[in-house]
Length: 325
Ligand code: AQP
Image (cartoon, rainbow, N blue to C red; front, side, top):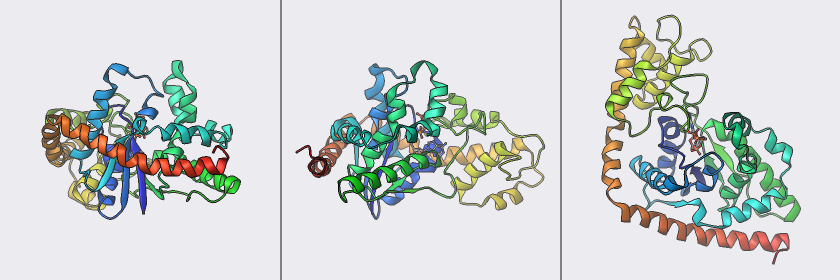
């Protein structure tokens, strides 16, 4: 299968990005043709500082390698280095109904969050994302639950394009994990954990042991004192149980039994230890790669060159079919 997925260099990666998306990316690279992209063009749709964008891109690549991506097994590159992304995005704009974009949950959420900056790019985000995947004729897109709607639009655009201009694209399907697809904020467990949110709401992959422990101990829990998995009645403790379960391989029922009669404090202390231990090797690798700037830049350079070749071939076909050449 041809796999494509992307991540924004908006901030450090958190455990939601890892458990919902990147962990799948690492597994898929073993048996599939995988292309993973740092989507810097998408990141421009929310307020950012041009002075540190390059640094954030570098941090994101390092995080992906530290989490297990292997540049020998997959392509890793920066979106803006392959100009065909913007080009295909524009062409797909001409077949995308605006109504489809206005109903997108991410657009609605981000327009509320960044009221002073509701730019056209924010609305158009899913079309660029469709271009990202279709450019490589991607067949599957491993993402968290929040991106399901965008992959659905990708399918619609692929279908429309094929109907209008002749069969060119397959309709990519989303690969969404049954568990971990939506890790919630530690501060407000009704909201998803988000990089650009309050740092107290996220466990970042490279947080220190102290920071992880402090955030988990302060995480919002629910009334009552039982450690029970119930997403509607106990969203806070259920989110923590889910993280515990995903990192240890124990089911939430097993954990309920293990923590029967224990209080929230005892459970959180144990979870903090689990998270610290799980992330320890990631932190070590991050330190190692942070000192290897040339190596990191080379990964991006080679990745872009490999991606560019595929992108050029698709664009030639697309332009021919659309009557541009
Ligand atoms: N809380 C989450 N639980 C599970 N999966 C998640 N993902 C994001 N948050 C969660 C998945 O991570 C991948 C990369 O996400 P992204 O950086 O492209 O953008 P996002 O979905 O908007 O992630 P954030 O953390 O919320 O970033 P900001 O705050 O910058 O917008 C995607 O596959 C996503 O589904």
